[in-house]
Image (tube, rainbow, N blue to C red):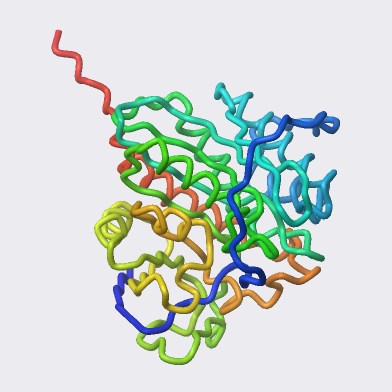
Length: 329
């Protein structure tokens, strides 16, 4: 496993580009009537989840409100079936002026909190299979597999709305709304992982590219990347120490470096929390990024499954999984 930590002046440009200035904080509003539920399959694979979100539902954001609501209901139903109580954080955005919902499912533990998050909206004009149905699929699988696991720390599985433009890096970005609330409550979040575009891998030479100034990394896009700013390096190292499966590369760079803050983890940095983004590097590898061609057939399901298994080991370690005590009789 290749683990390279680099402090650099440039970084991997991921997720959507900011298009608007920050706006005032959102205020809660009542939940709207839910659309019809999507039938849940037994033991869905990661690919099954991605196909529901990107094919059965498709493009999903506040301008495609019915589809976004279908995704919300599907995620909520999956979490409830796994035995979780789902908290819906509701707010009304300043641009489209519709109710938006973050969804939170928690495993109770002590006052130290680990947040694992992924955004469930897609960019405009794309079904968003890799960005970010892949992250949602892994997050739902993690919630399923850890549902009956006892942990010392509290674990929150957070599904964020409004990550994509025009909300990106505004106060209407779902993860910003949530992180701000956590800070106001003085919650002790000891680490946050943002799962962002996890599903595309290639063993072809020259399949991986980087912005100018990023050197020392392989040009084959078969690895998973962990991205952090310097204040989150302790969390990053713990992630790397516990990940097994795919090859791994890592980057440590200042938060203001281009691209480093371009996903939900940066919302937590703004409020002083340690956070790490986990990604396949999006546009520097994936030719279908933010395009109509970002469809489920582009996902490498075997590699995605390996990434999910490695992340499960990371989350169990971060959560301080309680091991069964040996029988001393």
